[in-house]
Length: 497
Image (tube, rainbow, N blue to C red; front, side, top):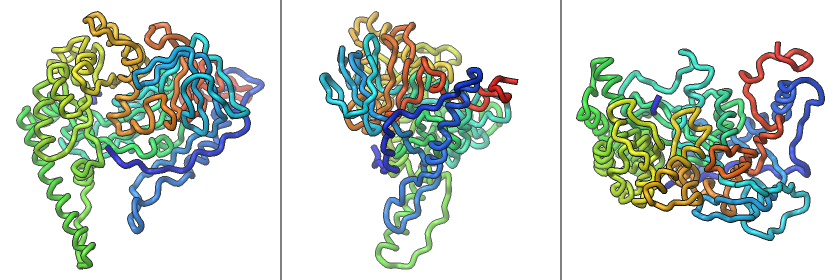
């Protein structure tokens, strides 16, 4: 299991109620109280699922399929006072204030003026960061409980399955979403696996409870295309299925052949559009779902997220991208990224990496613990990702590992800088850095309150806000989301039976 663009405007944020949303079970056990939390969200679920997505891009155009129905949960203004803020922009503000209003970050600084009715949170001893972002997740497509019937991350039936979309496999009831929320993850990109040269489209989600994946889709976020180089496609096809690709050269030939077809598809549609614009009669080309995805990449609408471990193979993929005129948003895993950090910086390509995973196969062997820091030091966009439902619950600790390794090497990096590896840099790779990833006025109020230094192994997430709504509170069971599989079956008294 391994795996910038124009933004659309979604439905407006609902006006906040005069009091924060509360819903309490006054009798019964803890399961009853959690059930009450979910029941009090039913009206929000129904409104979100009914909310229309963005309209057509232009008059007469059909809207894109599978539109987001995400609608932020109503929330009263919140004023966090006297906390240590890591803004995600490289700043650390001690004893500072953060004001959230209308689902946005309204102000950052000191001596702020808050509107009447604002909820005040004492930030003494607490640290505040942007919501954490995991650019490489398989939540929902490899859910828990895990069994053969729901292992939906790899459409390993052809080396090119660019036509599939990960969102059509996402199970919103996966209990791991709530566990990630408790770890401070507010946004995540769910990707197909890495069996194929072209694995299909990924989807960026807000980590909110929802009945449908459309209710979680991050408004205006571009799709990603999962590509894979290296050992996995060679093993799955050459070794296991006795078909191409079976070698590194077979991998590259497969990419190039597909991009040639995609370029021809783009030309067909361009010729058709030009004829229609000139008033000529023209027959539209037949739709091809696989080529639609690849054409979206060539037009700059879909971002490429490329599973790739070795430095030499990353350099080859950059050459392929240059040949066909597309851009790679990020290399994922990128165990040897430190060897080509200057190339990544020059090309504007991010690298999403682990702090210490290595050695589980040959292409993952030549790893150094300073990998992320070395990429960062070269001026490239460095990111820490998970590829694991457990690791993603502790992205703050993963960042702390890299920070320690960097400073042991004499880099003198600080927390204000390192937090970008799991916030703003990750948002950049997903094409949503103008919307989230830092504590800046006007951005989505995706915020995590920690009970101490988030770079300490002892720190715990205390509160998580998404678009200004308090969706997780470690001290309040009513604000700890639970899926059906967590709840089990309750009797009339609210106890498990």
